[in-house]
Each structure stands twice: as structure tokens, then as C-alpha cells.
Image (cartoon, rainbow, N blue to C red; front, side, top):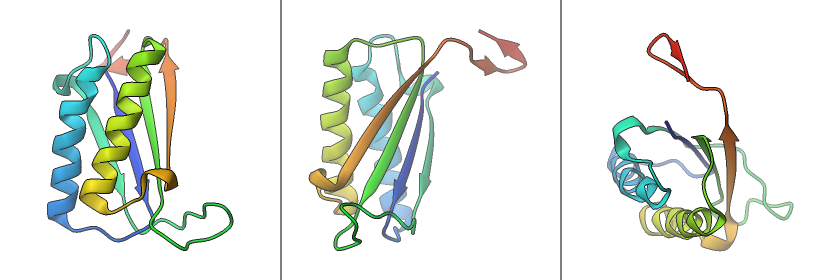
Amino acid sequence: MPFINVKVSEKVTDSQIETVKTELGKAISLLPGKSEGYLMVNIEDGCHLYFKGNQAAPTAMCEVSVYGSAPRNACEALTAEICRILESALSVPQNRTYVKFSFIDTWGYDGYLF
């Protein structure tokens, strides 16, 4: 039950959103036991993001919330892939992208609590 929340400083097109959503759906499988089958994605554009005190280039903040945990090497692989996706699809430089992981031990879905 992963959730990926992407905030990007630039305005993006519907086509770009679709590309990012599709690519993140593939990338989530880098975390053991996770798949697009339960992935929820949110993409917010036009955010007022400042990196190093400026808005000199496109910037992104990506939060990955996961029920359970994941090994560090899998998180590193997913970080690299998220940075690649955002650079390729949205022209956000990899060195202006943060990826934050949160591991959750209580998660609700479909009226139930895991």
C-alpha cells in the first residue's frame, strides 16, 4: 500500500502527469512486495518550492509512504529511479529533487485497518 506524493515547482501537462504516474507505477516494484496494484499517486504542480534559497530551476519534493518497511538498497534504487523519471518527464534536475521515505505500521484501506 504505497503512496507517492510528488510536488513540483513547474506547471505540467496532462500528458506529463500520465507519464510520471505510469513510470512511478513501474518503479514501485523496486521495493520488495510492492506493486502498482495498490499504489496511489498524487502529483501537485505549480508549487512554491525553494531549493538553496532560490527558484532558479525546476524543483521537486517526492514523498514515498509505505506500509511496512523496505531495505535501504531498495530505497536507494527507487530514489535513483524517481529522480530519473522526474528529470526525463518534467525536466527537474536530479540535484534539485528530494525523496523522503516514511514507513507506516498502521494503514487503513477499504474500511479495514492493517
